[in-house]
Length: 87
Image 1 (cartoon, rainbow, N blue to C red):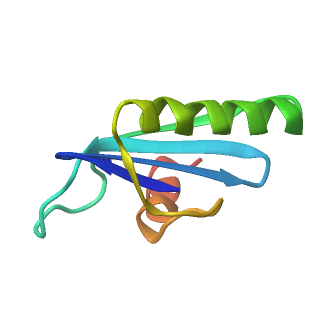
Image 2 (cartoon, rainbow, N blue to C red):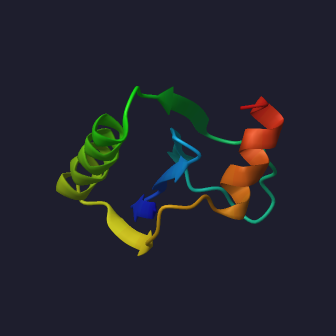
């Protein structure tokens, strides 16, 4: 899921049992990867992963972020960040 608020973005994806979060300032057209902060979270079971995922999204929605792209999967930028960070 990809969210934006003013000049910031927040992306969260659930891929193969791990939660990946990529966030920071919205890049301009000339910005190249890597940009922003990238984190990986591994939780022991699906219930905890789902709760963590939903809590993170709800935190951002409460702060005024708007959903730009819905879904569980990673964007192309996030997939590239996974390769760069070797996660």
